[in-house]
Amino acid sequence: MKKYWLDFAQIVAALAIVLAAALALDKAFPGLLPLTHGNVVIQEVAHGGSAHKVATFADAAQKSLTSVVNVFTSKQVRAPTNPLLNDPLFRQFFGQAFENQSRTVTSLGSGVIVSQDGYILTNHHMVEAADEIQVALPDGRKVKATVVGSDPDTDIAVLKIKQDGLHPITLAKPDTLRVGDVVLAVGDPFGVGQTVTMGIVSALGRNHLGINTFENFIQTDAAINPGNSGGALVDASGNLVGLNTAIYSRTGGSLGIGFAIPVSLLSKTMKQIIRHGGVVRGWIGVEVQDITPDIAESFNLKLAKGALIAGVLQNGPAFRAGIRPGDVLLAVNDHEIANSSSVLERVSALPPGDSARLKLIRQQTELTLNVRVDRRPPQQRQGQAD
Image (cartoon, rainbow, N blue to C red; front, side):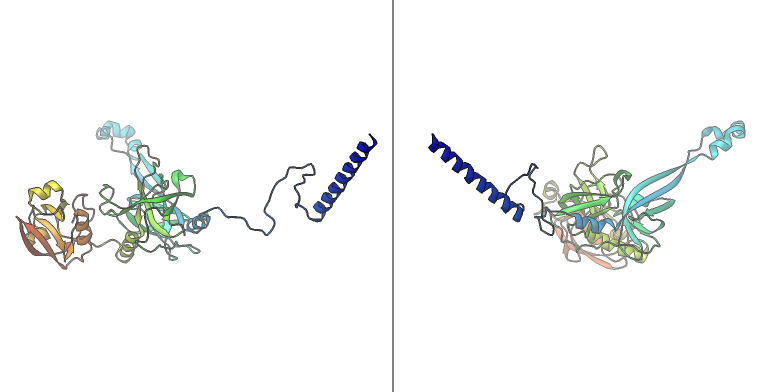
């Protein structure tokens, strides 16, 4: 029995020595041993230490937010004339009240500062017929804006403000965007204030949507809602790749299908608007449509390429050159035509007054005609290609 007590005393003494050594180590090197001292054990990054950073687009957002503005427009709309105003007795008692009836219609959108000189890009439909335009800068300043010019065919407008301390956005290089790239949509949806949403590029070169005459949209699933129109679509570096313009929606809210005008079209249109107050495009007065397999078979065409001349404006440039409905357009100045969209692109790029060489097929016979290009009239109907 005495032997057991002796062994027990030796074990207790050994445990006491181990515990004392552990306490000494913990005091000399805090955190080395998982001792709680009665508190919950937590791990924190040491001061001045580094931790693995989760992927973030905060820098891109911060860079672009300083260049995106809110655009407020208003216009006076007079009430329709009441038929009772034709009655002299009614006019005597109530005419003044009815004649002075009018209301102010306001709308909210976004814009992008592109120059220290105060030029701002936005959508044409945002400022169309507006009596007054006001721009709210990110720092809270509000300033009156004037319309330099706009282009209904691309839904692009350029505004001008007189203000110092502006932060223009950096334009990305054209045609560098790829499907799958991460993009951020920056704007003021529903008037709640500046908002950034993230998505990817879902598709490029979207057209035949019936939104604009000239369509070459970026499609994205970044949330674009009412009020985002005219706002910036930027890449992961915060550079402008597009101008948010439209959404596909049955409810009015974002369903993940938004469209933006690419920077290549923005840059070209903006320069013309600043220089000329509008966009100068070529026009020959024809209506075209795509060559479908059925059309190719009916015209005995070997390949379903080119564009069918569906209509020719009487006494227009194409009519005077001898082009007739039923001709198939294959090339413009030796540039092959793939479809109706490429006809619109090629012809609109021609300077008015120049002569264009058109390669056609008429009744299975190839011919070449020269057309003197005219200036495209404003606001041509959708479907009248050139």
